[in-house]
Image (cartoon, rainbow, N blue to C red; front, side):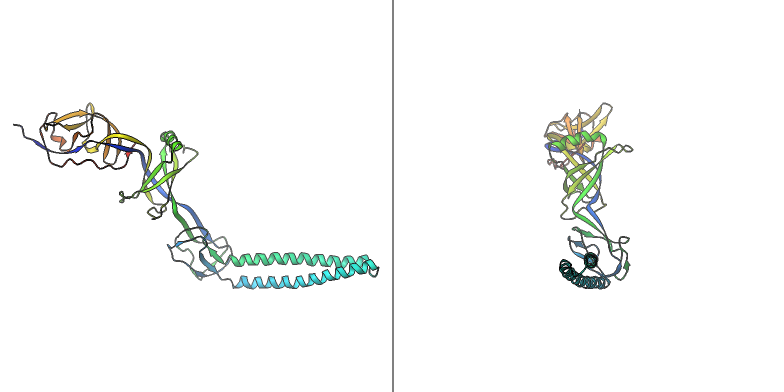
Length: 348
């Protein structure tokens, strides 16, 4: 009686399998702001800690406002002085207008007072503009966050003198939501666009060493041209990222789901052998002998492969111990044949 050879087997399952394109992606902030000062002065206060989350409108920095307050008071005083002079000149114009009608003064004298009034009116308008600008400059001393986001490293510490426009104080990255960018070969473009026209396409971002908790988003952007040098095209997916599991400039594995293959027969990829005539598997028959059966492979995902031809759901295939087998070998099954766990998608 021939000796039974020990093997490990798995059961071919019938599942609905997502068809996916898998690649590498890069996380990008939804928006990035380089915070700069618009006035020159001493950085008198910093109101946040590095790495802190901030809201739009939160006060970040304070520039020493005393010089700007003094300048504002000066312009306001100039405005008050010139306004008083303008009002007196206006009264003089009205008085001389009456005197001109009575023939007491000449037209030349009246014109002189009229010109003086108009000049003072222009001076007052210039003073008003100077006051408005001084208030604006004073307001620039309060530097606030223009977006919701997370603060980076402080580039200029309290006590330093900063110059307008030139100096970056800190960078804010908006991480809720966040983008993941990735590239696909141009050959995939037509199919991606076809499926995208029918429905929103789900995109998963898998952080290395955290494969069990992929972040879910959707495809939102396909670039308007193919990169000639690489033959690839840029795509973007948007993620809510409320838990901030994705971080700007992080590399992630990306799975773009195009469609669902229904009732697919799935087996572990390690069951598949390759010979001179193509791919085959060892199928365990009811009498515990094995049959070498050719199969046609479909899509793959991680450790599993779709079999498009050659297997039926429920059949047992050898996944360990094939090296010692031949067609008709007697085997002993060493494991429980639990159904396969569905992994959620197949690679194209």
